[in-house]
Amino acid sequence: MVHKPCILLAHLLDPRYGGSMQCPRNLTDSAYLNSIYQFIQEEYGEEEYGKILWQVTLYRTRRGPFEIAGIWKIAEGVNPISWWLAAPDVPSTAVVERNFRAFSHIQ
Image (cartoon, rainbow, N blue to C red; front, top):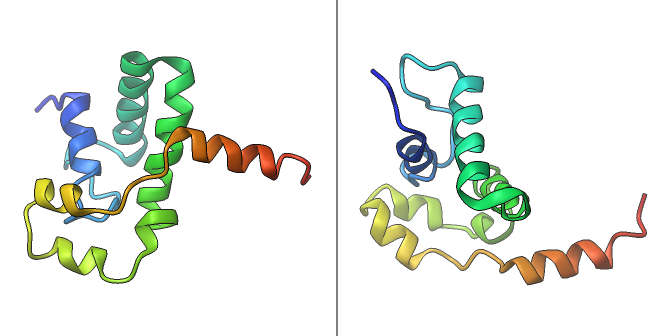
């Protein structure tokens, strides 16, 4: 079965899986992520790619707005769309860029 990259991205962002690497059976972990990352880069361009990748990383590692206690437990009982509508806001790219600039002197 061929999986479209947008479907793979939707699977990755499904809170019931919590960003885990539960990739479809016929794909390796690296093929799964490479397909998703290539799709993001092609659809959104180089500049947005880095910003989106950062937000996906926060989601997958349960950091930033995704480390709030209880939001992952809620995912077990609601459909993914409802969870995302109620999920904490992911920081805007302006906020992320400001944070990077603030800490840019740290080596």
